[in-house]
Image (cartoon, helix red, strand yellow):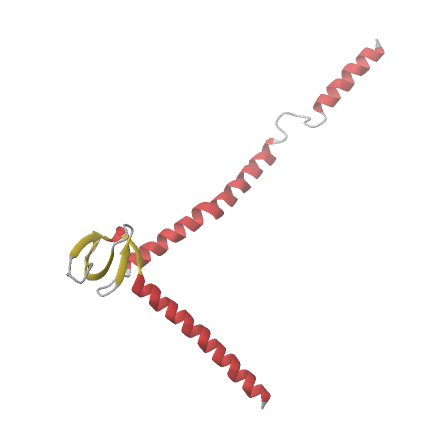
Length: 138
C-alpha cells in the first residue's frame, strides 16, 4: 500500500518537475516574445523606413537639368518640376513625358556628384596623410 502511494507521488512529482505551476513560464515567454519583436523591428521595419525616407528626400531634391531613371527604366533629363509631377525629355528627338515623382528610381546627376565628392574626400585624406608622413621624415 505504501509502495503504491510512493509510486503515485513519484509520478506526480515527475510530471510537475519541469513546470511546478501552469503559469510560471508566462512572464518569461512574454519577455522572449517582446525581445523577438524588437529584433524583428530593428532588422525589417526600421531599415525599410530609412530607405523610404531616403527615396522621398531624393525625389524632393530633383531639380531642372537632372538626369533621372524611372522605375520603368525610362532615362531622361528633367525639363520642369511641379509639386508632384516632372516633365522629362527622353531622347534627341525631344520627346517630352510627364511623370509622377514617385515613379523616379534614381537621380543620376546627384549620384555622380556624390560619388565625385567621396572620391575627392578620399584623395584629400591621402594627400594629407602623405604630407604628414613627409613632414615627419624631415
